[in-house]
Amino acid sequence: MSLNYDFEGAPNGKKMMSADEWPITEAIIFATMAIGLHEITEKNVDDFWCRINAQEMAFGALCYEGSADGPVPRYTSLEDIRLRIGLKTNASPKTKHQFMKGLGEHLLRDAQRRLVNKKREEKEAEAVAG
View 1 (cartoon, rainbow, N blue to C red):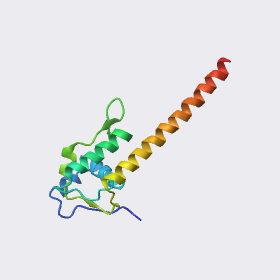
View 2: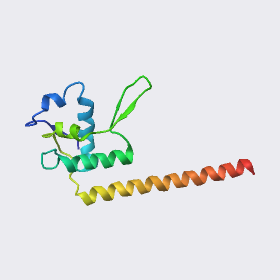
View 3: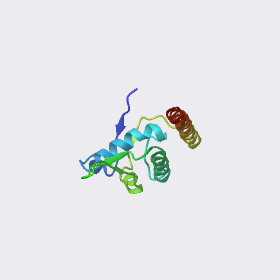
View 4: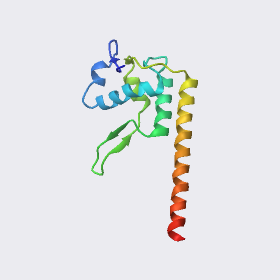
């Protein structure tokens, strides 16, 4: 199933589609699938940002900006989310519990993978030294 989005009724629809704002808008659109919120409203704007923020703390920024030194992470601000009130997608909804469970399981899998890699590196270092 494709991810569809809609700005109809969004007070800042034109602004969120501007060249400066589109990369952030697009990243937020795709993030709706991961965070399980398919619409930004006045009522859920804080929860929407908290889920995005948790996602970014776990996996890094949704967007990057160019600089002379290369790409720089650009974390999503609460104002970024407020600007996009009225944005809707067809992402599947997740309860807060479902979101947190999925995030926690992913973080635990990453930690277990790092542990396996660390042990492998230790064995390789022992073999070289031994």
